[in-house]
Length: 481
Image (cartoon, rainbow, N blue to C red):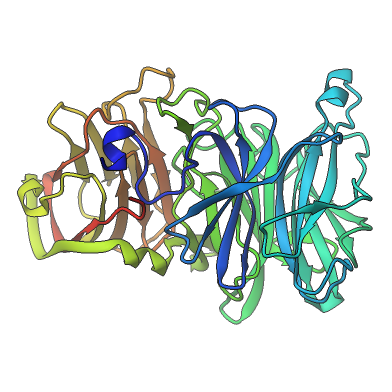
């Protein structure tokens, strides 16, 4: 029997653990042709508990194979979020090309004692491509200076100064550390006490450069919980310069990575060359522990390739699906110059019983329109553009099961940043999620939902009427059987 019949909401091309609780992606690294995804995992229940590092591997970031647990809690505490690097020059002395994981130890005993020093940074290494891990006997490598939220180290090599840089979340700001060898660390600077959104604690940061218009721009991602633009947890970012010691932002505007409610703790893979590839936890702390899935909880987003685009005087981060996603493409149809006034029902044309699809469309910003996913029991999810407000939206009010949390069944909105009249959109649908990439990734929204039956009906609606210059519909194959 196919997996989707047994497990109603199991995503078919997003990573999920076979069973039990998952949250933040950790230690994402590309090594010897394999993408490694580690993740916050509790193997004994489908609600959050003492954290381990789960592990999955993939050749293409689409089809994932779950591996044995990589890191278990120990006397120093639970294994909280962190990152992994390839130590090409053997700076740590564990061995050339060793994989080194840098993570937060969270000590629940000290936490109860309220010392404010219960989170420290530690390392572990693997000499067999991530199959087995040895924790460093000198852990922790950074003691806690008395900051209760002191976690989620993201480490990268800083070539100009031949040193490792750690970007660490420290309550309401980011603290940068540097090290020659991943073992001894020096505090360099702080950023963010007065910048960005502060509706909740800062978590899961990332720092990396992207070339744009001939110059290097540094991107600093900071996840925040709560305080997101549509409530709950979300990721914000800053663009600027980094000199190995200090991050200097180039804008005062608070910018968001994703305006949906279900892309949290998103960070990038290490060791992917000039590509910056982001993956997030496809849930929200507002309801993550109560979503109606069984025997697992949570999925990861589709991997996204990041870029930069200038609009007016501001530069924005763009996210698009990785090209590897094309491996899922199967049959479909294309339409050109289609007028929609009222409703255009594409259900028969799509012939898709699964709810797995990709839509690429191009229209003009002349009127409101929506893409409506529905099923025979009356569940509806709407993804659209509101011209008067110049906003995109995802409305999951009537999308199926919403009663598990009072704030779930809502309409989420996102600003349109693009200024041109053309609106290109890509919408990716899985069994229980949609991911919207508007204006070539300038506005991104990710939302999960729980329909009672597969969303096999599709229509486009526009009350005042639009012309779709182009619409391409593709049925996607499951990446897992």
